[in-house]
Length: 505
View 1 (cartoon, helix red, strand yellow):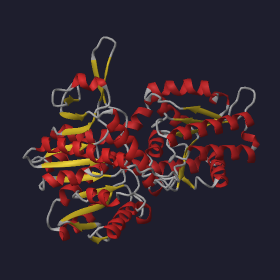
View 2 (cartoon, helix red, strand yellow; view 1 turned 180 degrees about the vertical axis):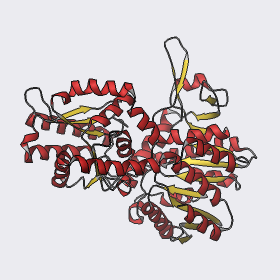
View 3 (cartoon, helix red, strand yellow; view 1 turned 135 degrees about the horizontal axis):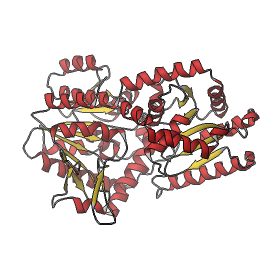
View 4 (cartoon, helix red, strand yellow; view 1 turned 180 degrees about the horizontal axis):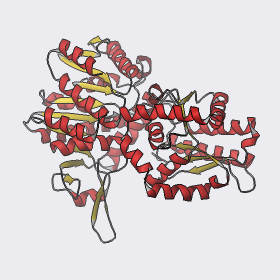
């Protein structure tokens, strides 16, 4: 099993001659000023930062990202650099300050009103605005300028994260032919018929083929990408080996299913703080009076299928009235991107469904649906995962869905049932979950009923299998495989490359 120490040893052994730069829209450490004006920096929750932070600590590289607050300005030097971690620096961040207009066009506009719905089959129409794409191009150029300035004339590896920076690899490659560039795309990739909706599909593909290595969650996403290249560009593709030859360059396209820091979540779930929170929540939710908790935890995005799971709970209460007064389904998770119309409408829809179900079935102080649209402390989420008899993750389309893996990692008692959408990438790994079609409300309700009536032996057998899977395929293994493949992708002997990479898959 991979650990953070294993990852650091790999970096020191393989990357000692290279500078490592990581580029993402979101920064790995955020800063705030307390009432006394003292600056504090902390790592936000999320598996990506937890995985790559050991890489950066080992090699003392630079993480380039967008600045997120005025407190960043107090921490950075004249070049936008901040040593991190703030109390014991091991590497540095370099932050890009964007105007509100730039951020609206690049991030909210083209990234999240264009590329996000284009890549997710959730029946939300992508909006493509030429002005938004102009900002997307210019911001990607600005990121490239920072990367090139940091590299200077040194050998460098650049690891780019996600769909906000699709053009960045090509912009770097235009000025630096020697850099080793890799990118991981954290969301699904569409087939050629869907991609052609985008007026700038060729520019997007060309940008991404500036990479030596391009990673997706699933092999199906890799095949979709290669099919899009074959349909749109003058390129030679080898789907069997996942190779694309284009503009006298070769890009290796490989699947790397992302995961979580299993040991960290497992350890947190065993702490006294979480145990105390479980006692408090049991009292607050009535679980100590025999009520059953069902759980959904999601950032509020229309891809997560939140209305679909609420309708499934409603159907359960229709079909099996014995759960009225007994089952409490808690939907937790903060709202997001609220200045985008489709996200605002989602919040309105969720609130309306919650009200309808509670008005229809609630009585004597009991409400079947509890709706907590806010950010909760980590120990509260951990306690909820431990208390929930089942967790429902009903994504309409999801690259992976790490919430499902977090539920599994928190179940130190090897109990609980995971109900998981067939359209989440995690369903390919967590095959001992109850896999459902979120659009099939009747089937979904039946799966909840099955979860509530599953034998103790079957629950534990299923959960034990999933915990073993997540523990073995953790976030450090994901990062290690990417770094090994990235080093191999830089070799000019691509026949040897294909065989070597296949052996590490």
